[in-house]
Length: 487
Picture (tube, helix red, strand yellow):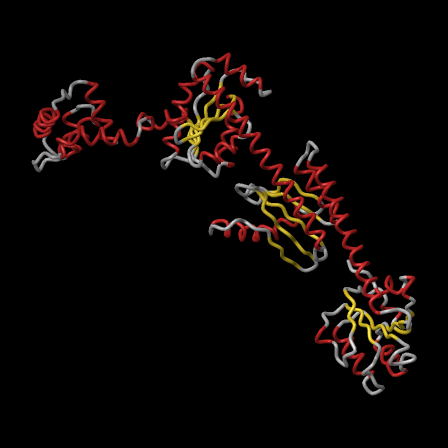
């Protein structure tokens, strides 16, 4: 923040006297401009202390001169006496007093350059103080990041440092932690997150953005280095100063560091859990149990359930959290205690973006291969119209066909029934066979269903047996044909 005109006036060596505009001495002085022009305003930005000796100023021009300075927004006017004028002209005093413009008398022995240096020193001191405050705030944020709460402590500290609110969001925009009234402000932030995600999808890196609402100014930044792992937002009731922007950026760096460190730590734990799962699959239950215990995990007692998650493997691994999980082929296998299987399956499906999920039946540690086969069969069904979550125990209620691989079953059906479809007679041997099997080989009932004589049906069934080279009285043959027809 720039020094005020009052601070400049009270600078002891300058000897400045305030003649008018005492009520406006708290205006900030952003620079000092020396000019003898009748109209210096084209060379001013506003906020300056203008210094002049009035060399070109006459009585008639005093009023318009002051008016131009006020319109430009200068902080004050310093008039040097003892050169062009022995004292400040009465017309200038009156005009400045009417306009409320602070008019300072600069004594002959005070050079204008001394006033410029004094203001420059004050600006430098103010900037140094702001930088010091920023460094101190960064130090407090860093110490907060080292606390057990990590990212949450950083968000709390940031809100206190700025005197506003702060909120940490996950990738979907859900609140992970809020300080101040951050949770209540999320509704206004979510549309802005869409803009950041859109930029990322277009190939650009997600950047921070700032926007204003009535009475509030908000900054939103992504969190994450290699990919966005969430967002954080900060809100104030006034525009952000450069120092406050620096503090926000420091908080963003600390949150990103905490997120990446957490990812690396979690990835390392996942690798160990995956190794433990492979040991279990190899039948080395004790070795797998010991590996998990070295992580501080307790191997689940009692039966276990295997979850097989399809879709995005990285998202499924991240959604698995601290569960024993391993990416294998085109799916992720997750091992959970049977008692919490339903809760774990629901959480995994929700966090992994409604991925197809197969849930095995409870098995013992020595039967994990069976559990994986069950989960894979359920996953195959979940990837079809039955999804997104299918339990192996439910497949039995859907019939034998639910347990078959759809592609393999279709190929089997096509190959087995091909001779009947290729038969050149007008008789539909496929439908005749279907009716015959559906009626359990009862000629009269099957013939009535088809609307033909039973002798006609007998002829057709002999033809079916000849074309397929199968004995239709064999129960195994009938079962195979019925599965093929059902597929």
